[in-house]
Length: 120
Image (cartoon, helix red, strand yellow):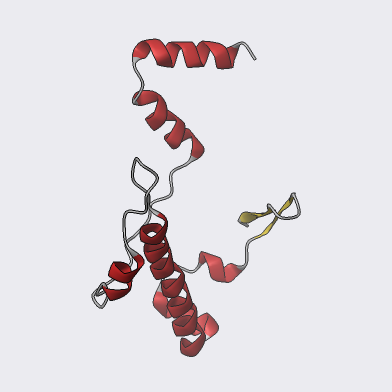
């Protein structure tokens, strides 16, 4: 039985609940059998919209070193996104992120940070 944590930043609350069986399915065939093709297609299309909007939003929000927007809205509106496809995003654990961040620091800085952390 898998569990899933749900966090409400708005309410400042969190709860861990039993994960629905459907979240453990691993193939399109299993999803279609459990949910029906129409629902699977609509869910996928809705998630694709979210992913696509995130790509455009990053371009819309990106600023340079002078805090100026990198991409003009008119240029962005004219951009051809016809061939856009989502990419697989690999989510790193907190430990992986920490190891990567610490690994990018000089040994002296890393040692100082870890010493400060260990003293708390």
